[in-house]
Amino acid sequence: MNLVLNVDHIRAVAPSNPSPQLVVDALLPVLAKYEIDRTPERMAMFLASWAHESNFICQSENLNYSAQRLTEVWPNRFPTLASAQPYAGNPQALANKVYNGRMGNRPGSNDGWTYRGRGWPQLTGRDAYRTYGGLIGRDLEGNPGLMLQADVSAAVCGAYWATRGLNRHADAGDMIAVTKGINGGQNGLEDRLRRYRAVIGMLREQAAALAGQEPVVYPTVRRLIVNGVEMDPATAVIEGDSIRLPSGTHRIVRLTTHVATR
Image (cartoon, rainbow, N blue to C red; front, side, top):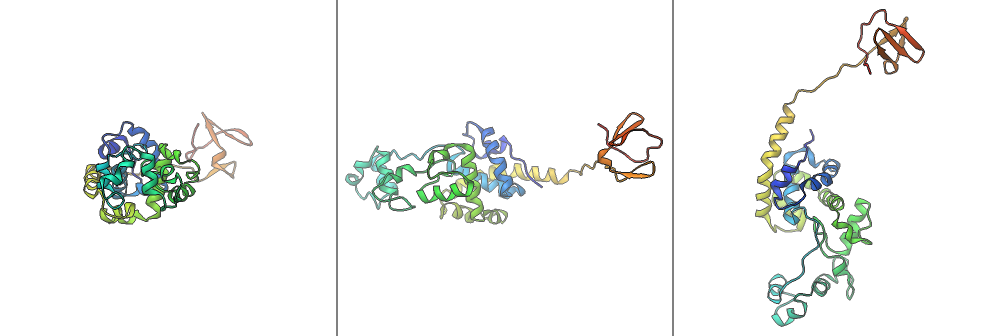
């Protein structure tokens, strides 16, 4: 059984997203590739997790902070207002200050700014851009702006999910483990759960409906005998009271099996 994502699911988890159909189109191949569409729990946790990160809106990290806010977000780096003041309202300098020297970003470079958070997963750091670019077959290290394309963001979200084995945690209903797998802690857990609850019922209803459908069976030809010789049914076309074969057109004397007509 494969669930089918639709715009109502996106609206449930990300009501502020302006283009839910764009999100659906980008996610459909990813959900199938990583078998996320096999259970309601997988799809609901996947959607809730990434909706929490970005509402499925492709944007770059907002690093435009006041000095006071910097002391609250990065108290170890900015213990006083005076230490934060040079970086207040200066996103590029701030990115290089807080991100360089880690995550593969080179000290004294512009890497912190170049590889700041982008896209649905807010991918951050040169190492991550290189790693996930390799996994999805795109040069994200050389072209970090690609993360602002919906299909690229979707592909990275899927690869990130798969490399951490999150399907099994989702199947177990373990949002804590899923959240740790994505950001290493429990940041935003309550919001993720709220979004999960908004969509899981819809997905379970769809799963039940799909499970209750009777299979549609189309008859196929098993044997075709022409003048005592068995022929390949795929080569036959019935036209009125005649049958057309590679050997020519013949009048039907007795039709005892179904042959597909065109």
